[in-house]
Length: 364
Image 1 (cartoon, rainbow, N blue to C red):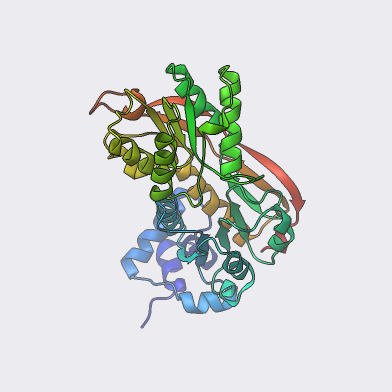
Image 2 (spheres, rainbow, N blue to C red; image 1 turned 120 degrees about the vertical axis):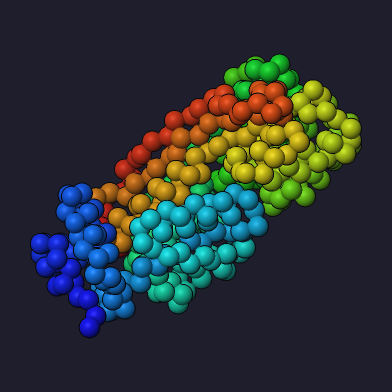
């Protein structure tokens, strides 16, 4: 006969409720009690009937992660980290790729597939501050990124302006005076490009360097190809450059390709900094200095906040978490010698802010 929760409770010398709390991941259990129950589960071979539990609790033990593009290293690594953090909570992750389409982003928020999971972690690209009312949903939601602020949801973001300013100041501290930026979006008021470009301008001002529009390289999608094209066009136009701040690592890799193609040495001729600290920049030649925006913290915090919302509980406010960012120095800025370990050369602290008072029951 199938082993029951009652059998486990008898063997462990605890109540059925305690066994239920252990198998359902309830956090407030003494470690010794949890170990005793787990030992009984292992000895008896008990398996939770998840189908019956899900029907009873209306839970699927699945969450959605919606991101613009998995081909970009940042989002691929973010998805990996979210999956790992979710697995620790006993959750499976359904990935939605929106491809930067407004229609698909709206469908992710409101479409029928939403009911397949218990909640969503959503990184919008086309939806903006003007669409904040669309985030008034009846399910647990955590928003990522810099396109939408003050939505009625928990929000995990990065310190874009301060981190970009620190990256620019770091280049200036190396004696660089013609610092270009690659990846700007003309006319953008809010979003990663606007915020990081603002940080770049603040860094120039603090370093006593003039802002030169000729050094601002516009780019569309932040891919390797656009980084290479933008960097190449700037060099071919004869614009004097001695340092480059690429607004993400994909464009930094593209910019590095353009520099190599023109026989320029990095960092001797031109220093280079990227943003995101993806795995690829550790293996380029030279290795690329990059801003680590706290990607691991973003993934884990987003999952933790979503799990809290799914569980419901007492009244609390929505929270905005700004992650700690740091500049990881490598060969492209001369911060480390070839083959030497990377080093942190600057750090920008994050924080937690309570945003909007709300009843947790609204999203439970």
